[in-house]
Length: 515
Image (cartoon, rainbow, N blue to C red; front, side, top):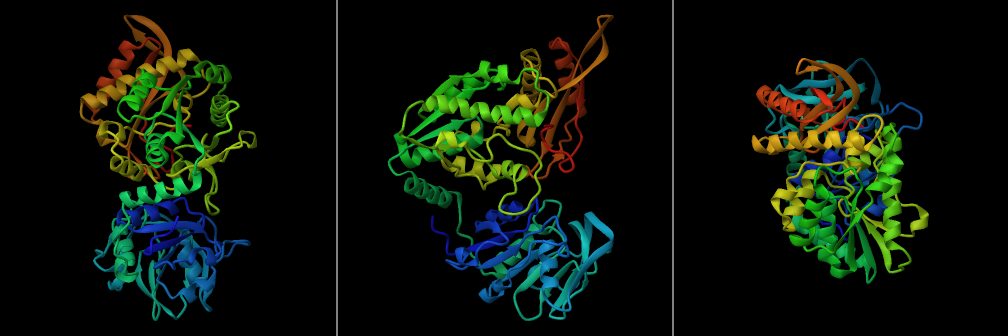
């Protein structure tokens, strides 16, 4: 796939927020690519990017083996923006610049005091909130740079080179907590790099169709449908590219929500005209999962079982050469080190490649997109809004929302509670006000009283969050009256549950899902 002539290169030094930089730039219709910090510059020089962003990272620039800066990048003579670790790299590259461990680690919100409001900080309000996350600080700034912003704890919070278009910020402009972050990135992209912004969902679709057609040729593609937005968009996109060369399999793994298998299968065949085969593999999955409590073991069993089902569907057919799936970047960044040294949070069943025995190549056209970007692409493809607006639903399904041992009885309890919660959110016009809502069945039983009789039943936790991208999230401040109503319905209507709690933790430090 050929690159846009206007694009920004993002070098990944391992930050959990690296992809957010790309996401913010894409909001401005700017094409960008993320590559590891040690990528061959020759591989990313055609065409030469209009700008380069150096991401944050978890290490200190003084650590042995710390990711380095390829100084040859200066020869490109294009604007550079260093973020957090990226700024410290720039400062430590020049003598006598130095980076040292700070006496006081700065994490969370800080107020940016502006010393110079030209170019990078143009239009930024003095004292605006920025998000810090660093243990080191710049002890000595090279004389070729000047400070253009500081905070109470960071004398060097924003800098620029005196001669070249090189800039750095100690905070993270890509996260939602930085009030002025979008404007700073916009200033860098448009004012400093001179981009116009011509990359859209329509152009993404055109590029992916061309890439899929070129890759697949006359071969067949098997698409694994989960019933969620991501895999549905992938199937629709690939179907648009290669038509009948695509065959889809929608698996009932026994871990779906109430009535979901039939409802979604009907939508696939009736509304989207996708070539879909429904496969009931619920017994296979539940037999393997019964009694399993460890979340990582659950995910691995579910992933392996999906592979077994797809392998059975392929059988002896030799015309299938590819397996398509709806892997997203948040799945990837939490599972493996994606294009850089980022930390592993948890595994995902659809990340990590395929076993050799399948002899299939993967097609993952939305692997580097966020959920909101996938939704935009889905709308452009004509997928109905009521489906596009669905909350995220994990590939392992309810299997990771039953905490502890899995059983059919516990899954049934969770299904009923989940349906009540989601139905009430829709009835009260709150469903579209939250990013994701779910119910978790806890391995906790407690004493209750119903009809003057003692009960000893399970507890469920309601979870609802607001988010822009799934990488960070705040708990949704749903009305108390609504939560009381949902709690009352669950306890009164579902025998086996006598206590309901509401999760008020944010991401980070928690994740959206419990497992």
